[in-house]
Length: 438
Image (cartoon, rainbow, N blue to C red):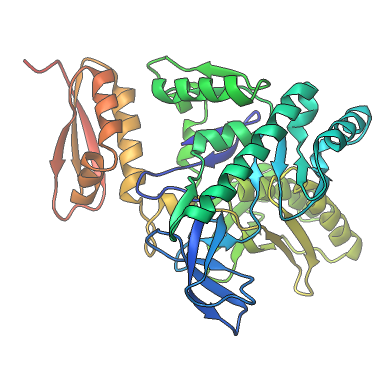
């Protein structure tokens, strides 16, 4: 799990052993079915679920092809695939199917952009494609040139492997959560508590990311509590969020869209100007929560009603500014005749609550419960004998996919947590008994 902070919790990402992300993985796949009506095709990539390739014109069943996962499976939908392969670095993206040099909008302009353009023109041959990324502005030319050469070599090796691979087969495994954060994150310090993960990150930085700053968290206090975001993490799936100026947000998901209601709650003033200020204050929190929860697709926001057209225009302008820093593409569609603000956000990965809550009546998944149990045991500290009473599926998760994490916690406590299966129990409770076992 990884938290991104900028004074407060901005993003929270989860990578489960029982549900690993496939984004960025490149596969030699085989077409299993062509859907002419929607112009797409299902492709077997060697995973439990087939991927869906949106542009399947000209394909036929049984055809082998190289594809890349661009979006993880979510609900009934399998992973989304693309035949336009891209290799991602920290400073440069390699796009062989899109020749030419493209610059990230976040790179900005000025002298450094001109220098990078000159550098790229001297390194990129006809028919090759690169994207110069924002992080390139923070490093020397040598680091950017090394990455261009490395990605060119990776592409040549991938091309050779694809010709020899028997579909379905993995050609390049998807990057880990830590690798994605180191590669795609901003210029802040990356703090890691796990020793093995820290060493792996050190090696990665030394080889390819000279601008990265890494720090080890070796305190006994859980890392998220030490950085003051433990309570924020616990509330990331809350249905109701209170915001400044007395407003309250309510989140309700449907199969078609996410609905967010802005309620004046305890007040905030009933004049039009006061309502506008309340709506704009709520808008900042709406944008924050959408990014934090990784909401995507169509999002409809019902603000407190305003009568004046000028007020709605100001709210719309504020909305476009509020979503500017979101790393995913957000389109502010406008305010409907019913007064609803409609936005769409690019779907990249499943929403955060899909990792934390069961479908149906809201309750924790066994994996989310296991994580919270381990954190609670660490908060108890040494000198205690943790006794867990939990639903059988939670205990099975701790003894199965989370057994390595449980062993690490036991080592830090100096003794083993006792696990009690309680048939019929749907949640868990943990007690701490003082003293050590004989």
